[in-house]
Amino acid sequence: MSLEPTTVLDEVLDLRERDVLDVGCGEGWLVRHLLAAGAQPVGIDPLAVALERARRDDANAPTGRYIEGEAEALPFRDGSFDVAIFFNSLHHVPVASLDIALSEAARVLRRGGVIYVQEPLAEGPFFELARAVEDETEVRAAAQDALTRAAAGPFTQRMRRDGAIATWLADYEGFRARMLSVEPARAAALTELDEELRVAFERLAVPAEGGYVFEQPFRAHLLAP
Image (cartoon, rainbow, N blue to C red; front, side, top):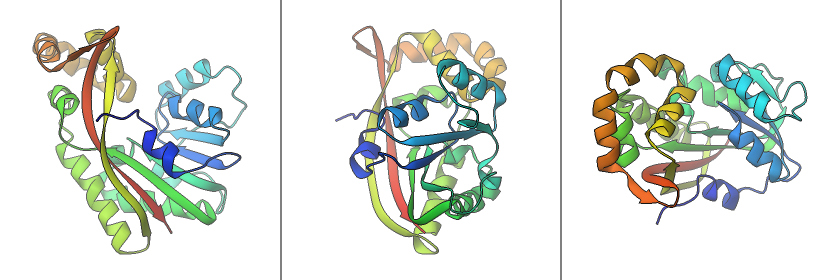
């Protein structure tokens, strides 16, 4: 059964009144979800254009809610947060820096803090559709390898759970916009592969109310330093 994107996160963590860092926040959708859940979130992302959209869509955002920066060099003091979250973002960190990114997340946690990581797996209809634009098979596997090393070494793995989310898209243009929001440099590939992608979209999509659904398997981890 497909889950909502934040089902596991909401089940395993009570984030009310917690200082939470969203590493790789993109356009800020998770930051806004965390705010609604009563958390005190900060989002960080290396893409300035994504942060501009996040600030636009979060009209009441104070200075400092969205910060430009990289996971492997977090611009925060030690012990600044209660929880650090990588939500579909760890595999975007350079492979050589994955262990450093997890160590940086641990560094900025207070005593008793935890790291929540939810990563898409290299399988399922949505992955099959997107891989023609950018095949993330290797980087997604590398992210899982880094999490395995973390659990076997400096971290304690408190939870690991597999599941699948239903990715809803209104139409093909929604898919294109989603791909560009994560990485604007994909524009050329999307244009070049437009006809092929439209055919694949129709083949893989499951009609749903007001649009289409694509299943995306994921694996969630909860780590404690």
